[in-house]
Length: 192
Image 1 (cartoon, rainbow, N blue to C red):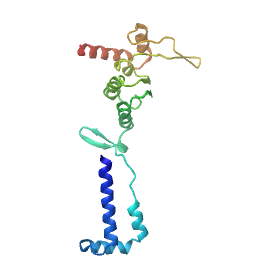
Image 2: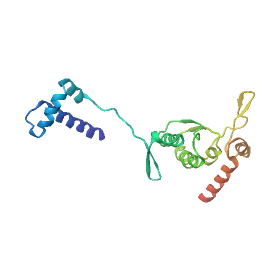
Image 3: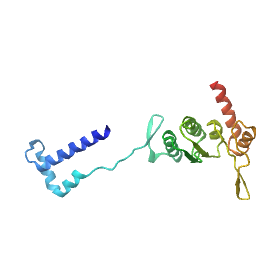
Image 4: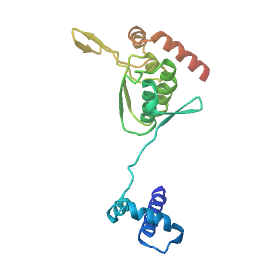
Protein backbone atom coordinates (compact mmCIF):
# COMPACT_ATOMS: atom_id res chain seq x y z
CA UNK A 1 0.00 0.00 0.00
CA UNK A 2 2.84 2.37 0.85
CA UNK A 3 4.35 1.78 -2.64
CA UNK A 4 1.16 3.09 -4.22
CA UNK A 5 1.46 6.37 -2.31
CA UNK A 6 5.17 6.69 -3.11
CA UNK A 7 4.56 6.00 -6.82
CA UNK A 8 1.67 8.46 -6.98
CA UNK A 9 3.79 11.12 -5.21
CA UNK A 10 6.68 10.55 -7.66
CA UNK A 11 4.27 10.68 -10.60
CA UNK A 12 2.74 13.93 -9.32
CA UNK A 13 6.15 15.58 -8.88
CA UNK A 14 7.28 14.36 -12.32
CA UNK A 15 4.15 15.77 -13.94
CA UNK A 16 4.59 19.10 -12.11
CA UNK A 17 8.24 19.47 -13.20
CA UNK A 18 7.29 18.61 -16.79
CA UNK A 19 4.41 21.11 -16.75
CA UNK A 20 6.50 23.94 -15.25
CA UNK A 21 9.42 23.41 -17.65
CA UNK A 22 7.61 22.73 -20.91
CA UNK A 23 4.37 24.75 -20.65
CA UNK A 24 4.54 28.54 -20.68
CA UNK A 25 0.90 29.16 -19.70
CA UNK A 26 1.46 28.59 -15.97
CA UNK A 27 1.34 32.18 -14.75
CA UNK A 28 1.59 31.02 -11.15
CA UNK A 29 4.98 29.37 -11.79
CA UNK A 30 6.23 31.60 -14.64
CA UNK A 31 9.06 33.19 -12.62
CA UNK A 32 10.22 29.79 -11.35
CA UNK A 33 9.93 28.25 -14.86
CA UNK A 34 11.98 31.10 -16.35
CA UNK A 35 14.69 30.60 -13.71
CA UNK A 36 14.75 26.82 -14.22
CA UNK A 37 15.01 27.24 -18.01
CA UNK A 38 18.02 29.56 -17.54
CA UNK A 39 19.97 27.07 -15.41
CA UNK A 40 18.76 23.71 -16.72
CA UNK A 41 19.00 22.12 -20.13
CA UNK A 42 16.37 19.68 -21.40
CA UNK A 43 18.90 16.91 -20.68
CA UNK A 44 19.14 17.95 -16.99
CA UNK A 45 15.34 18.13 -16.73
CA UNK A 46 15.09 14.62 -18.21
CA UNK A 47 17.65 13.35 -15.68
CA UNK A 48 15.68 15.03 -12.89
CA UNK A 49 12.46 13.43 -14.13
CA UNK A 50 14.10 9.99 -14.26
CA UNK A 51 15.95 10.29 -10.94
CA UNK A 52 14.83 8.10 -8.09
CA UNK A 53 16.43 8.62 -4.69
CA UNK A 54 18.28 5.74 -3.05
CA UNK A 55 16.43 3.88 -0.34
CA UNK A 56 17.68 4.84 3.07
CA UNK A 57 17.28 3.56 6.56
CA UNK A 58 17.66 5.88 9.49
CA UNK A 59 18.29 4.00 12.72
CA UNK A 60 18.03 5.77 16.05
CA UNK A 61 18.28 4.50 19.59
CA UNK A 62 15.87 5.66 22.23
CA UNK A 63 17.71 6.33 25.48
CA UNK A 64 15.98 8.17 28.33
CA UNK A 65 13.34 9.50 25.89
CA UNK A 66 16.11 10.90 23.68
CA UNK A 67 16.78 9.71 20.13
CA UNK A 68 20.43 9.01 19.33
CA UNK A 69 21.51 8.43 15.70
CA UNK A 70 23.17 5.02 15.44
CA UNK A 71 26.34 6.62 14.04
CA UNK A 72 26.74 8.53 17.34
CA UNK A 73 26.11 5.49 19.54
CA UNK A 74 28.73 3.64 21.54
CA UNK A 75 29.98 0.21 20.45
CA UNK A 76 27.74 -1.39 23.07
CA UNK A 77 24.68 0.56 21.92
CA UNK A 78 25.34 -0.41 18.29
CA UNK A 79 25.76 -4.04 19.30
CA UNK A 80 22.53 -3.87 21.31
CA UNK A 81 20.58 -2.38 18.40
CA UNK A 82 21.79 -5.00 15.94
CA UNK A 83 21.18 -7.85 18.39
CA UNK A 84 17.72 -6.57 19.17
CA UNK A 85 16.87 -6.53 15.48
CA UNK A 86 18.39 -9.95 14.75
CA UNK A 87 16.66 -11.60 17.71
CA UNK A 88 13.30 -9.98 16.98
CA UNK A 89 12.87 -11.07 13.37
CA UNK A 90 13.05 -14.35 11.54
CA UNK A 91 12.41 -18.01 12.08
CA UNK A 92 15.56 -19.50 10.58
CA UNK A 93 18.27 -21.00 12.82
CA UNK A 94 20.63 -18.43 14.30
CA UNK A 95 24.26 -18.78 15.41
CA UNK A 96 25.64 -16.02 17.67
CA UNK A 97 29.30 -15.84 18.65
CA UNK A 98 29.80 -13.95 21.92
CA UNK A 99 26.80 -11.63 21.64
CA UNK A 100 27.74 -10.15 25.03
CA UNK A 101 30.77 -8.31 23.60
CA UNK A 102 30.66 -4.56 24.38
CA UNK A 103 27.52 -4.97 26.51
CA UNK A 104 27.22 -4.35 30.23
CA UNK A 105 25.46 -6.84 32.49
CA UNK A 106 22.21 -4.88 32.50
CA UNK A 107 22.02 -4.91 28.70
CA UNK A 108 22.98 -8.58 28.59
CA UNK A 109 20.08 -9.42 30.87
CA UNK A 110 17.48 -6.96 29.59
CA UNK A 111 18.27 -7.40 25.92
CA UNK A 112 19.84 -10.75 25.12
CA UNK A 113 18.35 -12.90 27.87
CA UNK A 114 14.82 -11.50 27.55
CA UNK A 115 14.76 -11.71 23.76
CA UNK A 116 16.27 -15.19 23.71
CA UNK A 117 13.45 -16.40 25.91
CA UNK A 118 10.93 -14.93 23.46
CA UNK A 119 12.57 -16.09 20.24
CA UNK A 120 13.65 -19.62 21.12
CA UNK A 121 10.11 -20.95 20.65
CA UNK A 122 10.20 -19.72 17.03
CA UNK A 123 13.74 -20.63 15.98
CA UNK A 124 16.78 -22.64 16.94
CA UNK A 125 19.45 -20.45 18.53
CA UNK A 126 23.03 -21.61 19.07
CA UNK A 127 25.22 -19.31 21.16
CA UNK A 128 28.93 -19.35 21.89
CA UNK A 129 29.43 -17.35 25.09
CA UNK A 130 31.59 -16.74 28.13
CA UNK A 131 28.67 -15.21 30.03
CA UNK A 132 26.75 -17.42 32.44
CA UNK A 133 23.73 -15.09 32.48
CA UNK A 134 23.02 -15.93 28.85
CA UNK A 135 23.25 -19.68 29.45
CA UNK A 136 21.45 -19.79 32.79
CA UNK A 137 18.83 -17.03 32.63
CA UNK A 138 17.88 -17.53 28.99
CA UNK A 139 17.01 -21.11 30.03
CA UNK A 140 19.45 -22.92 27.73
CA UNK A 141 18.11 -26.33 26.81
CA UNK A 142 21.49 -27.87 25.97
CA UNK A 143 24.91 -26.77 27.23
CA UNK A 144 28.25 -27.81 25.75
CA UNK A 145 30.97 -26.71 28.21
CA UNK A 146 34.24 -26.58 26.25
CA UNK A 147 37.72 -27.32 27.49
CA UNK A 148 40.99 -26.86 25.59
CA UNK A 149 43.81 -29.36 26.09
CA UNK A 150 47.04 -29.19 24.08
CA UNK A 151 45.35 -27.02 21.46
CA UNK A 152 42.36 -29.32 21.03
CA UNK A 153 38.82 -28.29 22.01
CA UNK A 154 36.99 -30.97 23.97
CA UNK A 155 33.38 -31.38 25.08
CA UNK A 156 33.66 -34.01 27.80
CA UNK A 157 30.03 -33.71 28.89
CA UNK A 158 26.87 -32.08 27.56
CA UNK A 159 23.47 -31.63 29.09
CA UNK A 160 20.86 -29.24 30.42
CA UNK A 161 21.29 -26.80 33.28
CA UNK A 162 19.25 -29.17 35.44
CA UNK A 163 22.24 -31.56 35.37
CA UNK A 164 24.38 -31.05 38.51
CA UNK A 165 27.70 -31.61 36.65
CA UNK A 166 26.74 -29.08 33.96
CA UNK A 167 25.78 -26.51 36.63
CA UNK A 168 29.18 -27.01 38.27
CA UNK A 169 30.98 -26.53 34.93
CA UNK A 170 28.96 -23.37 34.28
CA UNK A 171 30.04 -22.01 37.67
CA UNK A 172 33.68 -23.04 37.11
CA UNK A 173 34.09 -21.97 33.48
CA UNK A 174 31.72 -19.11 32.68
CA UNK A 175 31.96 -15.55 33.96
CA UNK A 176 29.44 -14.90 36.75
CA UNK A 177 28.25 -18.50 37.00
CA UNK A 178 27.25 -18.58 40.67
CA UNK A 179 25.61 -15.14 40.47
CA UNK A 180 23.66 -16.19 37.36
CA UNK A 181 22.20 -19.17 39.20
CA UNK A 182 21.22 -16.92 42.13
CA UNK A 183 19.43 -14.58 39.69
CA UNK A 184 17.70 -17.55 38.06
CA UNK A 185 16.55 -18.85 41.44
CA UNK A 186 15.10 -15.42 42.32
CA UNK A 187 13.38 -15.12 38.93
CA UNK A 188 11.84 -18.59 39.09
CA UNK A 189 10.79 -18.04 42.71
CA UNK A 190 9.09 -14.74 41.77
CA UNK A 191 7.39 -16.23 38.68
CA UNK A 192 5.84 -19.03 40.75
